[in-house]
Image (cartoon, rainbow, N blue to C red; front, top):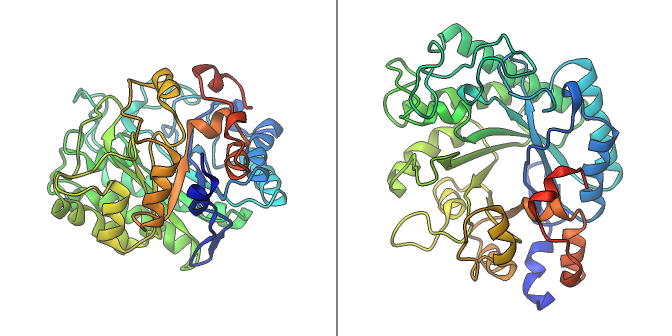
Length: 369
């Protein structure tokens, strides 16, 4: 690989109070290595290795807000309670000491959880209409009082992130989890202000963003992650046209999002017919806000085969994503599985040591390398 062709990845980036050494973002990836929801020294070392090897911004794995049904595994880290927050303070200290920047991803899984899942097996799953992705009724629809309590839990987590010293937050609104269940007509059959039109279905997220903004002030960065696709529903679209995407994005942008993290499975795929722009490109064009692209970056065709179906990955290479970055289609590039497998991925890429990169395989998820 010609090192000159990828230098765009290593240019600094700044927006508001967030300044990054380069355009490389570690994508959030659930790891389940935090017993009883407490991230330990091994988790801190895991994130530190990425920071000291040149990742510009680390977005943590999804962390549970303070709600009993927020997650479905007792080894998913919590973002509430003294022990868990102290654990995150240690993670933060390690990353900052290594010169990195880090933000927690705040998460609620909604009706993807089933009753009996830990850490709170007695808790019922929750969702806008109590429907899972198969449209099965698994719970009662959330009441407005319950919705308000969940919104408060997001704001509490945002305030704690700022108090501890994180560099911002990411709100997880993608992949068919709780916030996305409000976005998606299939799982949101409400007839009150939280349901109905595409714009109305953004109301829950809008209120979360506003509550978080009020909790952290005007200068603290808020990243919002969204997707068209859902787990198991890979061709689903919230917005079928650019006009619908604008209707969807404008309320979120106005509520206080600083950066949109636009989740796609393959970054090179055009979002709409008639334009080469991907989802991050369209989002930046519509909102004027900085965007993060993501989706199979750094996976060659052989490695991608191990993780999912065969990709058209002749295009899915670093030079392609950097060309789009330099054309200002988006501003930042999130790396997932490639960084999970090799903590030194960014440094090796920078130094043109690509032959030394450890490839991703399913075994990469078995340890905190």
